[in-house]
Image (cartoon, rainbow, N blue to C red):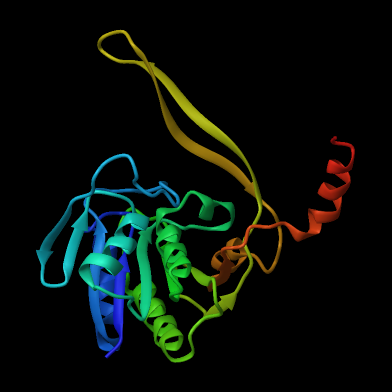
Length: 247
């Protein structure tokens, strides 16, 4: 029976991770190892400056007082005592589209799977006041079933985004690009010390018809194959010329 590791960045008690785990149960033995607290927007952080605590909450459900990346590594070494057949991260409450994948702890869970030589899938759902995870969980189940059968290319993982409306199907996509403006609130605490709160990001998305942004806007589940190699090969000649004048 395949072993499936489930993690997230919304925390071990999040409704999204429970819906995901339940949807994957027919495919294999599911184990949840997820952050004890919400860890949104932590990116691919790895905790190195303090010890980590691993707590068993229930049968095959564990919490870690760290990041999604920490969770995947502790799961492999100390919970499963070996590599699972698949890692699925989510279901995140809010999209992880385009450039946002660089911030996302949800995406980082799938990325860490790829670094461990494992197939990984990150699943995110459109932000809403009230969440219905049914469609996202079913999309995750269908894709996981196929990945367990066919695998993924080495060092590749999937970033999946599911719209709120009734989905029309799956669409293979690329990352959207955007321009952004960060909003940061400045205020003062009761002791008169100034503090800052990153409030929101205002952005404009490009119009690439193949992008993840356009897919979910049109009502499709976006499936983007991402890779670990960040090298911009288009710029190699430019950087070569840039360095010629350096002694």
